[in-house]
Image 1 (cartoon, rainbow, N blue to C red):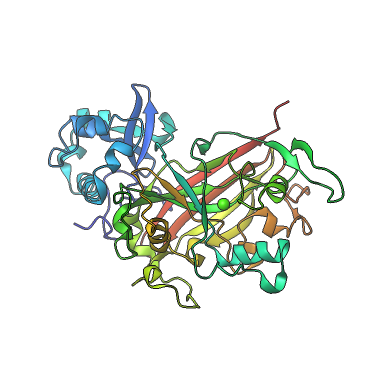
Image 2 (image 1 turned 30 degrees about the vertical axis):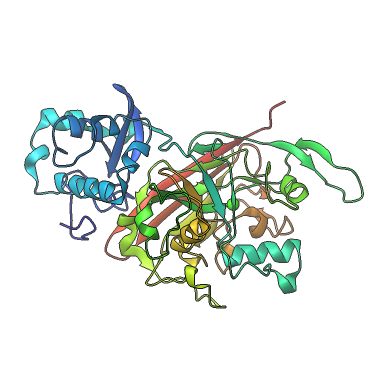
Length: 423
Ligand code: CA
């Protein structure tokens, strides 16, 4: 049966409004009392140890090597490509369907396979070789252009023709839950004076989503928009932490450097593109017409509700932005086609982030830079303090989910607390 069938129910309990009904089946890497690392999935608040499932023979019709599920990342699994992860998701969906008694009625097996979410630790799920950050929200690019350049010509001449992006750094992509240490760097606070050095005063988040690739084509070959989704494994939430003062001083002419590479954080579960299929939607009309290699057919955007929350130290959460992934001007298929059109190769476990996802309304902007319009309109929090940017002790939490009225699936969260700069 199609794992996306909205009628499917699981014998594993799923709380109402859970991000993880049986229609999701995300993949991640966990550790628990008995194991340092193991590939896992999740239904409701129950974690499923896929290594145990494999050892007990429940995945015997699939052709995975034994060590794929005891690896410390999803990378070995990703080398099996789209068909591999698709077959795995279908098999898991079948094992956990409400009427399938194979595992359901064998307590000695289910005790080994099932763990409570509270009893496991999430690990960083990937070994990311290369990381690329796009800049694909028209609203975000327009807002930034209005603030820093010319309000009348906010978009640069290339923006409507190219999914603009840059190569980032993978070593500092971290997991939800890990603290963010306020970065230090050069800033030019006073335009009339030389630069100064110190902790950033303008620490910001960027609300993004990222996709993860399978092995692409050999160096020299390209991936078309039509084939692109065959090379995309799944998605996670992505916070591209940014230091705006460092960025402003350093970014000319080669783009951001130390303002971005101190940390980006991701949510731990990767939701497959297959699971997102029922939530596909059309993107914004692209005008002027794009070049042939960027043309595409069908609905390539995804309707994903996104939220950003700031929680001050010992305070209550404040929702500061509600946006949606569907606003993206350039879709993932176009991004991957563009990335490889020159023959650049991508590898299993590469990560490509969307760029800040801002919507049309000021309440849907995806960064403090835009929400407070460079600090000119501070946000009042429910403890009566104000924020122009992110303060030490603040926790920034991003969540995302899809809901088509039949089934809701979600991404969990990416949440990180900001600690003061090191001495
Ligand atoms: Ca970014």
